[in-house]
Length: 149
Image (cartoon, rainbow, N blue to C red; front, side, top):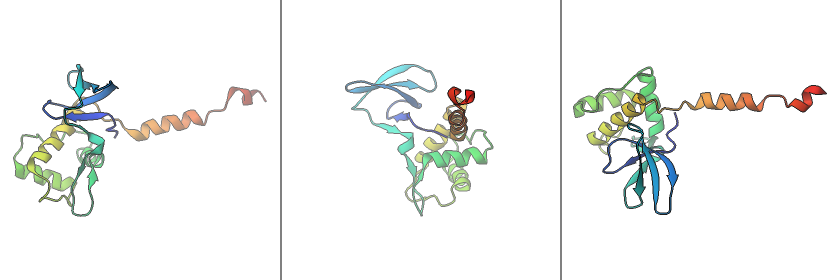
């Protein structure tokens, strides 16, 4: 599961992919609509790969939390992000039992579940092991010059 280049922009609904960088802005593309727009340096932009969830032991990267939800749901969607706070805490507690309930708020869990469902709905989850296997098979091929010898 690769979250590289996936962004959340404060004040903008949904998630975005980083497309290009300008002098004082970046060009982003909405995962939902595919529409491109500039995001200026004054906007609060968060990369999903830099976000982590507080636990009692250590912070767990969002990538790992999404993978645990993906495994729990066997590749399906998570519960609705509009569920009650108790339902959200119970759901995430099944996936991440060591979550720090004092530092993680219900609004954080709503975003977590909403982002997961959005990425799942638009097939934005890249499975890293498949990509790594493809590059390994390409690197193990025999060069044409050594076949003749």
